[in-house]
Structure formats: C-alpha cells, structure tokens
Length: 123
View 1 (cartoon, one colour):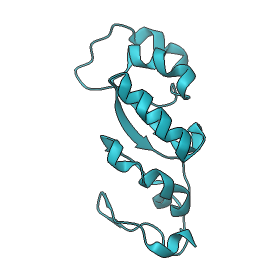
View 2: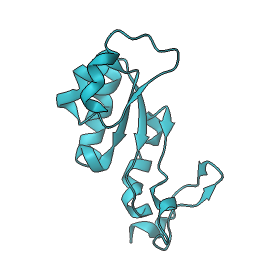
View 3: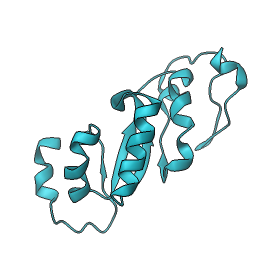
View 4: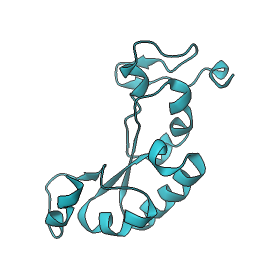
C-alpha cells in the first residue's frame, strides 16, 4: 500500500520496482525517486498529454525509468498516451481490451504488440 512506501527507503531490490498508486505527479516525485526505480505514468491521473510530457521529463531528470499505464477506457482515451510510448521503457495500454466493446477504429493488438492508430480514430 502507498501508505507503507517508507519501508522501501534504502531497499536494494534485485528487480526494478515501479511506483503506481504511490505516484500522483510532481508533488510525490521526489519521495518516489528515493524508493522506486520506475514510475507508472497514467494520463488519467496526471492531467492529460501536456502534463504527462512535463512529468516524463521530470522523471528522466531524476534518473527513473518510465512506464506508461492506463485506466480502463476506449482506444480514443488511450490515443494520447500512445503518442508517449517512445519515451517509456514499458508500455501497458491495455485498457480497451478490458471493455466488452471498443469504439470503431480502435487499437488493434497482435499478441502483446499494439498496432499503429487508425487515422479515423480521432474523428
């Protein structure tokens, strides 16, 4: 739980640990940087594409890896995050797969690979 993050201070993990629920943007970044090797950035929680770009730069400045994650949502909701995929070490934009039905022109997945966006997705 995020409330117990202080227990990780000074822990040398053999695998990179990622801050997910503990990361709420710039106000929590310095504390997260002392405890984690990676930040899971979700546009839903960070204020959109422009805020996410600024946060990605701040994450890199602190020497952390970046994971791009999402909440459950349509491909249109994931599309801005997909534009940031090249900045991330790990990408987990599976939100549309968790829906009974995605919107027309949505992402196509081939196994664990997301296919490029269809131009008609944006409307």
